[in-house]
Amino acid sequence: MQGDTSAKQQKREQLAQLLITKFRNKYNVVAGKDSEMDLLIVEEVRKLLKNGNASESGLVKLDMKLGQIAAQVKMGKPSPSNRESAPPQA
Image 1 (cartoon, rainbow, N blue to C red):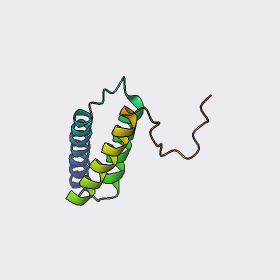
Image 2: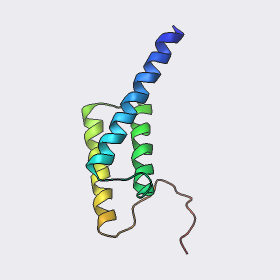
Image 3: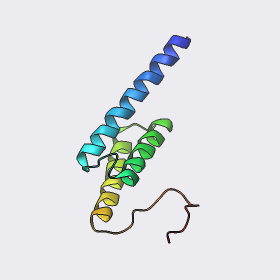
Image 4: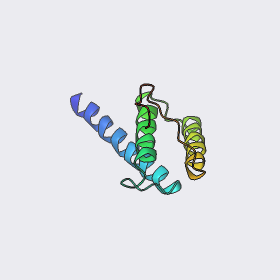
């Protein structure tokens, strides 16, 4: 049984990496350059898969959310952060 769990975790990790790469490419995010957007993509994909909601509707919602944030970033607006206790910007 343990091998089955390990295989599922490995498949979930592969799916996460595929989705992260897909969204990075779609929104032209370079990991080293666009670190805030990249981190958001990684966190949101992992959250989606952790919740077990990797359905088509879950992916569409995530895509829409990332698209809205990417548009705000391109317009120069600060991107919303999931961190409630982020330190204030000086």
